Structures are given as C-alpha cells and as structure tokens.
Length: 228
Image (tube, rainbow, N blue to C red; front, side, top):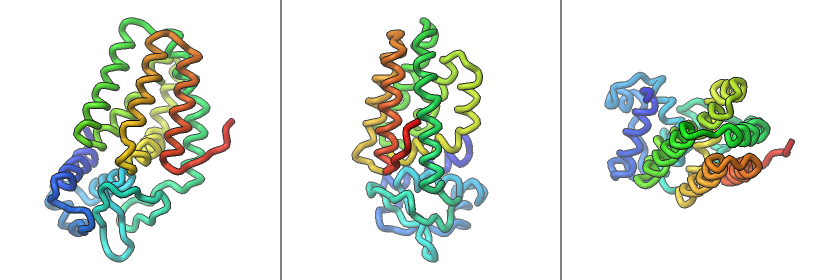
C-alpha cells in the first residue's frame, strides 16, 4: 500500500473513532503531515482520497472540515488538495469505462477457468470485508483491483493496459459514490452479479451486469453521460 493510502487509512480511522469529529477542522497541513510522518505531497493525495470518499471537505481560506456521513458535492473547490476532475472529465471517464469494461467482462466469461474464478471472488471478499468496517480506503482499492482483474482475465493485454493507464481517473470515479455512506454496499452487490456471470461463463450476462453497474455507479456519483 502506498504512503498516501496508508495516511488516508490512518485519518479515516481517526475520523471514525471520533478523534476528529464531524464539523471539526483538521489540523493544518504542516502539523498533520508531521504527525503522520509523511510529506505534504503525500498528505495532499491522502486528503484528496478522503474528500472523494466523503470524509472531509476543503474550505477555501479556512482549512479542511470533517464531513463524515454527509454527501459531498463533486463540484466542491478543494483549496488544499489537488483539484478534482471536472464534471466533463468524469463524464468522459465513465463513457470510456462503458466502452471497454463490459467487453472485458464478456471476454473474461468466455475464457474463465478454475484458476481465475477464485481470484475474482477473493478480491470481492476483501472488498466486502472492508465495507463491514467502513474502511472505505481499502474498499475503494479492492474495487479498483476487481475492475483491473477483469481486464486481466479478459486475456486481452490491451484491455488490461487501459485499466492501468487510466487507473487514477478510474480510482476517482470509483471513490465518488462512497461519499454517500448510506449506499456503500450497492457496488458490492453489483460486483457479485458480475462475478457470478463471469464464473458461470455467461458472456452476455457479464456484459449486461457490467453495463448496469457502470450506469448505477455514475448515477450514485451524480454523473450522467452519453451512451456510445
């Protein structure tokens, strides 16, 4: 796990445990970075993750507010973190994902074997275990791994390469729906349908399940996009 992920996970635990309460401002970046033993660059990346997940919100000229449990607008201005993707960029990301991920899922179902199925369900299990403890940092990482693994299981190196080339954009698009903490289990339930179709060798079912998942994920993030 990268340093920003570790820092995000640490801050997430502190928020969930009440060390930093909803409505409270986090310490300044310099103090926070020193307390976590990381660089300010790593801290900014960690804060960007937590903002997308709905744990915090940057307040221009004020600092970083703990907002755990409140849905965060994707249009918010992150004054102290890297600027989030614009709505147009997110629409483009979901549109791109809608083009290649259903195809990858269908191909994975066509070439499924006794070695690939356990790997898929193992990632799904880690995803669900993280959700049980509201560890959304680990959940979003497992979510990304699930989608990247399907790219690998498709047997097409190009599809796998796309998932890695666009990993940052895909990661952000995956985190946004988790900002609504009341609906965090919905992606896992949709993943189960995808995994079941791939495991059964049902290419059409896998393609449809992935398309449905992507449409629902975008909707949970407040994003609509033109279907190809």
